[in-house]
Image (cartoon, rainbow, N blue to C red):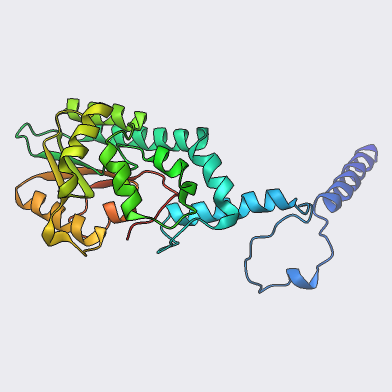
Length: 270
Ligand SMILES: [Mg+2]
């Protein structure tokens, strides 16, 4: 009898706890199946301030730029001018550049260098090896429409500084035994100032510098750079890595085994 009583107490205890554990909230009409699976945000999100909203919108804009979802685009949206200025002059841009360089080097180290001198890495120049930030500092960080004449004057000064993380990557990649191709949208008329600037910034010993010739005029960067990559391949080189700040440096045909996109929220080149 005592045993039965104990069993009854245990059963009562379990039933009461199970009923608690398995109690189900009342079914809301919106929870009825079938229903679309839509990400639900908590209702506790507070209404952000205007400055926070601007920051969030500009975050979204920059994400769309870097993911190449927003293309083409002409200038930085007015409300994102201060945001882009703070980004490119602050630690976020530096850290993003360092991240790209680190992952590029990680990839480069995995490549088996054949020793026949035909393993190649391509670098773009502007906003990839050299920074034109001093120019853009006095031209609205991308708020102003690109002015080719003013930019040429800047280029001809040959004083664009190196992007430090890219300089380190460049030297490491070269030391690993890659042939270095510099493929730029600059015109052949800027050959000498480009060499002068590269050397001044610390970039030495590349294997080939390719600039836009008369036959490349009017071509999109995607077409021009694809054609040049194909020529490199036809010479027998294996392109293992390609570093550029524009998707037009990286897309098209004869693409590299791995492409590395450096950040650039200041301008877009098709
Ligand atoms: Mg570039």
